[in-house]
Structures are given as C-alpha cells and as structure tokens.
Image (cartoon, rainbow, N blue to C red; front, side, top):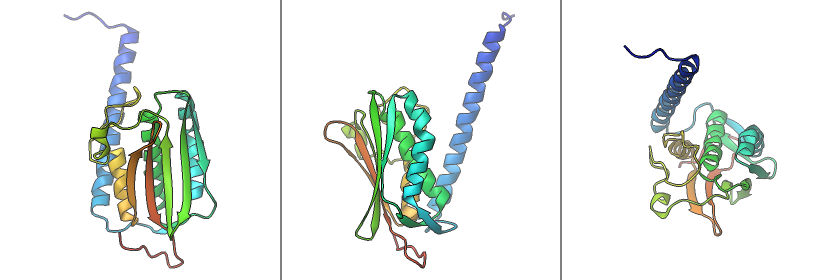
Length: 206
C-alpha cells in the first residue's frame, strides 16, 4: 500500500492536472481554428479594423508579461491603418506573433519587442521584432509549419507549435502574406502584409 500524500503533494498534483487540462483545451481550440481557416477562402464577419488600435491594445495587454521577462513592448504606427477583415482573427494573428516573440525572443534581458505598422503601395505592413537570439537557420524556413517548435528561446516553452501556423492562415484568408527573417545584430522580425481597406470592404484575391 502506498504512503499517504501530504496536503502539499495533493496541491501540486492538482495543479499539474489543471495545467495539463488547460494545455489540452488550448490545443483543441487551436486545431478547431486551423480547421475553420483551412476551409475559409475569406474571413468571416468582415468589418473595418484599425491595425494601429489593435497594436496599441496588444502592447498594453502584453506589458505585464513582458515585464516578467525584463522586456519592453514599444509601438510605432500612424493612425487610420484600416483593413477589411475579421477583428477577432486579426487580433489573434498579432497576439500570436507577440506571444511567439516573448517565448523565443526574450531570453537575453533587458530586451525589446518593437511593433510597427505602415502604409505602403496600397498595403499595410505590420512587423513584430524581438531582440533575442534569432532563429536557427535550420528552423527559419519552417517556422510556419504546424507543430514546428524552434530550438532557441526562453524556458517558457509551453506552446505546441501552432501559433505561427494560425497566424499564417489568418493572413492568407485576409489576402495577406507573412514572412520571418533574422535581424542583423540579433533577433527576429516577422512581417505581415495585408491589403488596405477600400470603402466597399471587398477583399482582393490572395
């Protein structure tokens, strides 16, 4: 017969079980999101979305977690950067990119995550840049693959490798593209290019 566990051991076991349940719930949600995006030719519930507002809001909500990593989040945008799309999906796209930067680009504090957005040639380009170690060459070409997890980054490695895949699919359904490159001097920058909105809210073909 096994020994009786202490109250602390029971609490630790329950906390581990809860964490496992939460990870499974996130995985199920991610897989359902990918299935929906795979079947979508265009975003649902199209509306005008100001990406400048989205980036500032995300900087605010991620500030506390960034501070835990000794990282600051800075935003450089101009107002009125409108795209036609689904607000929830676009928010998730850029939240995933910021989350990825915190997970894998924040292991050399103090650091910075720089968010920028600008209008260029009827498209809006949004970049999320970190000051971490960058992406290993063998991973760079495949970071948007599903269940792909890089070998560099912080100890905060609770993801399952779907965040960037979801970001890519959301960009695709909005007629956009996404790409990642290493920065000179260290770090990585992920850039999303989306068509700027027109009055009719009609999306160009991807």
